[in-house]
Image 1 (cartoon, helix red, strand yellow):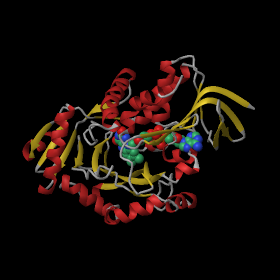
Image 2 (spheres, rainbow, N blue to C red):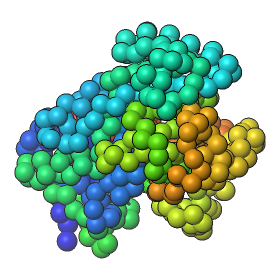
Image 3 (cartoon, rainbow, N blue to C red):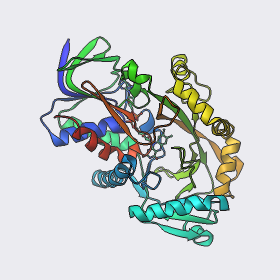
Image 4 (cartoon, rainbow, N blue to C red):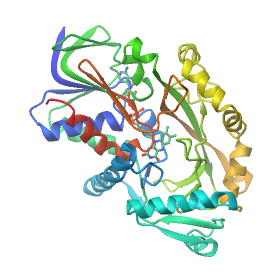
Length: 392
Ligand SMILES: Cc1cc2nc3c(=O)[nH]c(=O)nc-3n(C[C@H](O)[C@H](O)[C@H](O)COP(=O)(O)OP(=O)(O)OC[C@H]3O[C@@H](n4cnc5c(N)ncnc54)[C@H](O)[C@@H]3O)c2cc1C
């Protein structure tokens, strides 16, 4: 049996839903279908992230990340306010814990000025006034940074989509997508959906729909991050270390959650299973996919020391040690394992991690190939950009 649609969106994370919302808001008469392989929304990156609506400070000012994060963050905040979705203004502090961090801190301060982000440079005493448990020699404070629950945003968008006649189907894993000049044929467990356009928002699996020739050049590598829950002290703002600007990860940080918990993490290390959230999960196909990619070996060679350090730093003890630099009153016994998330990070064959968002069309399929953090913050703006590329 064949079912016909104008557009099929694959993936029920924040990006798939944002894209579907943008399409139906722009052209309500479009026949639109969202396919999600799990039996609920936001099961992967979207439901396992830090919940931060990022300010945009970390990204090159002329990048898509910078532009979409700043514009998208405002849209997400407005959407939460309009729809009664949890939203808390907790602020964010980037902390120099030693002299070695000062140059990068001042570099970020200049960038904040350039981007017009609301911020202030605080000395040690002033930083303590904002967060009494914080310990640093200097910090930049961004008072407008909020936290939210991205899974709750997805539920709200789904309700809106269904009210507007969009079909959102669960337990619908797309096995393959074939294209001819006019249409795409989407296979889901023996059923075929026919659609003029397909938008692939499948996160860590997005490269599996690419042609083999392109998969030689780029692949999505899963990087796991573990979160620990701190029972004390009650940190009430986001505390971040000064980042390594060469890597797209932000370093172990403190995040208060919308449920009044305090999380520490996530670290970043290679995962041998794209959906393996347990400690020792291993998937032979995913592991082969990583090790058979020349880019991975180039990356490993270039970043050998950083990889070994990240592995060493993945234990509870080393996370505690990193976190204590920012908050010395944190006791080892106060932290317990909480959860983990897996980032979908595109890597090129020369071993570089793609820094910016990457969208790539093949035939009638538009693939979201690189949308790691801050893609949840940026999702409504990313959707606007993607839908602008489609002839609706
Ligand atoms: C640990 C961690 C912390 C983060 N913190 C933040 C943060 O604080 N702020 C921020 O802005 N960003 C953050 N991010 C990034 C952000 O969460 C992601 O960029 C964003 O959620 C990506 O959304 P997505 O919809 O592309 O992917 P996902 O949420 O992974 O959704 C992809 C969906 O596709 C479905 N799917 C996959 N294959 C198929 C198939 N074959 N058929 C049908 N469905 C399929 C999956 O089941 C899944 O639901 C973080 C990410 C991680 C992992």
